Image (tube, rainbow, N blue to C red; front, side, top):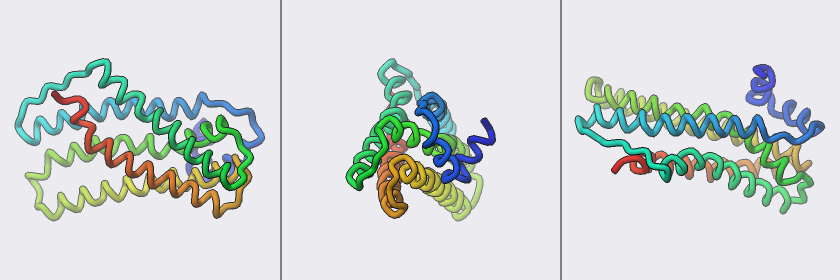
Length: 203
């Protein structure tokens, strides 16, 4: 498993060349997205806890069934929507792959995004020390975390390039275009959801 995931992250061209000859299986991609979903749930509580300490206030965090479903299902919804967008563009450019295969390989490409879900926790930790360090240093820390976020989204975009190229048998340039659109849309989604992640839980 480790070798397979390492190949996915660092040699996606080889990974998806091999996957095109195998039967479509959504289990591992679904697990990748599920882990991201669970980490997102933990992050929601962690960040609100850090805000309590940083801003010296007592925030009541209430996890309602609706809030739980929103946080847990949000990554799965993003997975399906991104797969649909990638599938639509690839089919527009005469791609030959199926939607299920696109869903599978988009899920594989979400692995860096799953890793990315721990960044808000790190950001929350640094919120607590911003009053103890010079403003320039705290600004630099935030800038580095934002850069990490961008790099991980680009990393998934890089994986999606080969995922779509191999899945749909399209030209590399067309795969780059489709993956770039998906990465930009995910980056917008990431910014919006993380701005509102505390508001979702707080009353």
